[in-house]
Image (cartoon, rainbow, N blue to C red; front, side, top):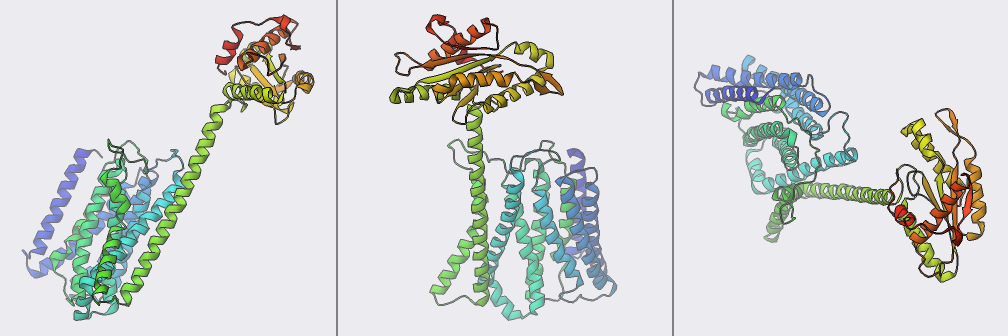
Length: 536
């Protein structure tokens, strides 16, 4: 539905609801008509809210579909309760008992809507991949509910201590009737807190539906507060004007289900934009401090009253302990989440470090790590007097093999060659991919260099099976032994000598091993080429 059409529907629906509220609330019709209009308007609004939520779910997928279906079920249950209420008022012409069967439907609805809001908070699209969102989303939903319960408990203690206790004692309603009446605004506060918390995070694609849900919860909360006040005051008949929320709330929830959402999916827990000075915006502080402000206010009031000799009663004490327990649980959930996030960060750092120093295709060390270890070997050898030994292998005619097999098969062949090279050396040796088909091996023992070189050549003589076909790959290997105390010896010098020895092996028929000797000479451009080569 486009926004223009939705605006027309919203204006028409709200205008009709307001007209009904005015006619019934201000008694502009005969009393019998007012009674019928008020009850049937609530019944019609609930039915409309149910149908709009359910029908708007058609053609949608994922959480967009689920939250509408759940919310439609909630309003359907509420409508059934309204049927009972209407039956008493219109058909039997009597006040329903307090509580009645209608209260079951009325109380179940906000609980179901709470579930719908938690599903609403999941803004992933079907098939989308959101980094580490599943576990974090579950914890965030738990925190949302805990925040709502903390605020409700704190505000209830506050209102009970200041106003409600004396009013209840004066009117003396039945405990069950009072409990049912007060449950309405308390559950509404939980819904309102969750709506506000969702509004402080970046649900960009669902701002409009969330706004209508928030307005619906507010109107429902106002009517429920009036209802709870009248019941606690012992009033038997609820004025029609007090029922305005029961007419407008279903309409607003229906419009939330019909409201067009942004076509650009935005993750629920994207980092909030920071201010120019780097500090968090005010809305983020509201998100963090909301559950604690009512708790601090309530605790301060109780401390002040206790200091003046007005100690809290059993209800305040027990409910206060429950609120404190909720705060502890919330902190534990937050602590677990922070520990989990830190572990994810450490894993990401280790992964980035591995990617920075290893070849992505073969998993071998890359030229950066190889040069670092070669420099370290020269430095360590100069102190201990151990020679530095380096093998440099270049695959013979690999370009022809790669072009004939294709790049995918060529990559598979390179991985197989890397595995075979690793199997020929010890774990203390460093095997690296220095270029497209160039490999370097840094040995920690110079005495076995010849044997390692021959073992490498022997291993490569065994054909590789790629794609069900056998392929023979040979390599020319240059071997360098150097005294680390030699003046001017660097990693570039060693790589240059190894490259010269390798090319000498190629000139001698390929598939052979040549040990560097000064008589072979040094090619000036070899070291820079190896230093700047990029793995293919």
